[in-house]
Length: 530
Image (cartoon, rainbow, N blue to C red; front, side):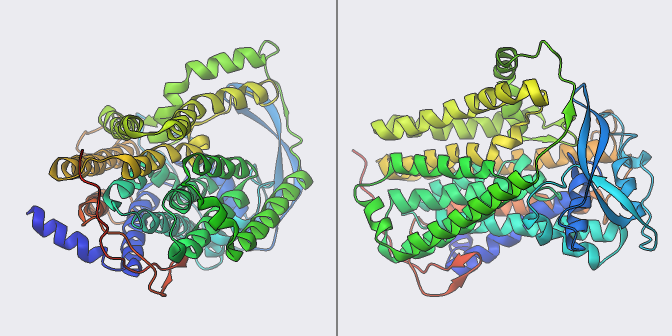
């Protein structure tokens, strides 16, 4: 059985083009299953992003500023939203979930249906009106193809396709290492259930997280495993991932610099000089500089005029302490917290996922050199302290608004970096190591499936409903059983990638997805165990 699975894995990864296509299909199945099995309005702030995307697709990059009273995280305020001209049914997106949101014991069966008439045009406000329009243009065109709910599901699938393309390119980058099973495991560990959930929604956070995974997956081999034949293609993937990351929000510049600094701490001697001598590196630097300038200019020209009544006793120190005490909650949110942060993943998913990530980190620390240890520990400290510092600074003006997914574009670097260090430094090879990697990947697939079923149960039957979804009050298009099968099949098939023979890939001159393809390279010899 094991040999059969290895042969199948080798065939799936035989060429870079095939690997990218298969990876894209599997990640699209995962994100698309979330897209089609989640009710409209059952993900954070999706109504605001849908309205923004539909407006941008109709040429409305801006709009009229409208002050709207809101209560967010127990804090009242007048929020500056953007008024746009859309069919009147878009306004219903704001309240369609009101009967079950923040009530996980209730299913989505109580929600009313959506109209689809395009005749009555009215002003609809969105809290996402100041955001960079690039992502919204990429997904909003679907609202011009189909009307009503069908167009919204298509919009979600467009978002899932963007995320799947970025993740597929990350898998190809991971497969270039000479012990690719470990580095591919790092990418699979980075693609948490929360990442896949957000990829399947109309929310720029999903593309941002997927771009973060691609940036880390591309920058580390450039500096840790330099290969002149692969450099141009690696730079292309890094540039594309960084462009998406920075275009979504200016904070992406910080996440990108964090990945670059991590790569510089881990670099091999002379790797940076080789990069700086390559013309493509300077062209991508200019492109990213222009992208960063445009993103910062857009933000500066669209300030937030919201007036929020934060408590007078909410000081920077108090907010920082509260955030530090909530660190475990944020970590759990990075692994999986579905709905409007009202449905945490089951304990098994949290336990398995955190165990695999920490196992990679601990193994890496066992083999790491001084600079590599600094990079790993710095990443761990950053995962805890970045929210503490960020929310401590902004809480007196904006309140306690931090969510774990905000940090995921940076936090995904931990398992990817740990896997790269294990590949570079670990002398251990053979059956025990391969068995550990395969069991870890299989465990992640089961944890992933459990998270998906848990989110589906919350929407179809409620958390107090039937454990086996036998008495569902809401059913997604096609039935809940169909999407469990689709999601489970994709999650299990991804496990095959870590079972292929450990041989890296070299350029063959073909074109590949988001960058240029890489060809095959003969198997490298791995140093024997001491």
